[in-house]
Image 1: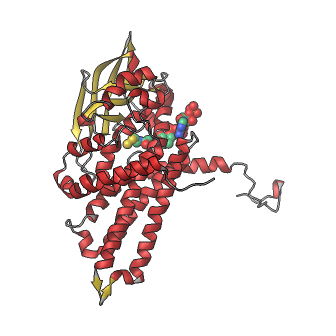
Image 2: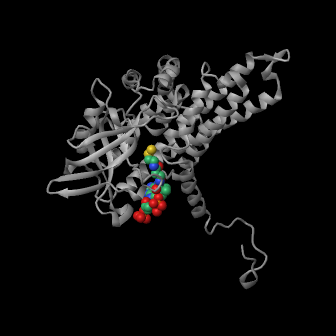
Image 3: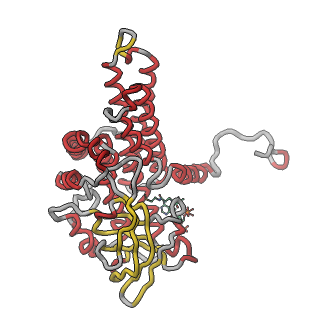
Length: 402
Ligand code: COS
């Protein structure tokens, strides 16, 4: 049976996230963009309202909610500000490989203290390096075993929430010759000796999230900081991204919907040629396409999340959702500005900031080109040997070569 209705718990968390956005995010979005500072008070509020760390199991101090519920939260927060949504969601990304690979004892020791205190604690997902971006298997950061400790050396870049993080999930290789099979994931406390924050990035948009380099110099961590088996880090990274790309798609859906709503509101009050511009088909057809994109993005996103929640493969659907939703967010922001004309381009209106924030959605957690590699190769695999009912007229040596 297909059921598009949300259940009671889902509606409750969605409502709570919408209230958070309405009260604490939307009214502050322009100020946060101007200040370019991490909004700790806003993220603390999200934490207090139970909108963070959603997947952490109850036994490790978390609320043990599912991915569909996470997408409801990130869509609602993304509607107000994509940067705040990225900061609210950053722990989901950093914790995911740990939740996938660690034992309950490890979760109790390393994750529970981060999710049960009064103050919000943040974590960073350290995969990307200067020379290892889309090609995630080419990680250079080294991990060497020394008796009962791991010693880490290397540098990570563009790490979300790094300057204010308490814990990092770090991908490092024990043997670069093994390529992806040499990569493992480690939990590294941010205050471990040898961990330093490097250059802090200045970005085009999403100013309410912060990214920086993290430098690891002879960082010694106990052997129980290794997550899962040695050499499983790349798989854990891919499994993580299959989940979290649905979360990014949800932020993008929120952005796409906001652009529709602001443009429709403007078109309903703005009068030209003696009537509201919404009456002109040049405007209403554009709004129709924008609304269709936002709704389609929402369905793709929820489908990708639903599959993961039912322990079904979702790599292709997550990639579809992330690509379509972020392209839609960008297109809707551009179209909304066009509908609003000169007003849309001005800083007094929210659309120019929404447009700058939307661009990053097409880039982070795997560029949309990487998403197309993932979904394209899944399609080719699925179609191999598929009988479509169309058969070539000639067989054997006379068959046309295609
Ligand atoms: N789930 C589980 N395992 C997966 C997987 C998935 N979704 N995708 C790939 N794997 C496994 C493969 O099965 C293969 O395992 P075996 O060697 O045991 O057969 C292994 O991982 C390597 O797979 P593949 O050859 O496809 O890896 P590539 O090096 O070609 O990389 C891409 C594939 C490009 C998809 C990957 O590097 C990627 O996602 N890059 C983007 C990284 C990213 O998103 N960075 C942003 C960081 S967060 S801001």
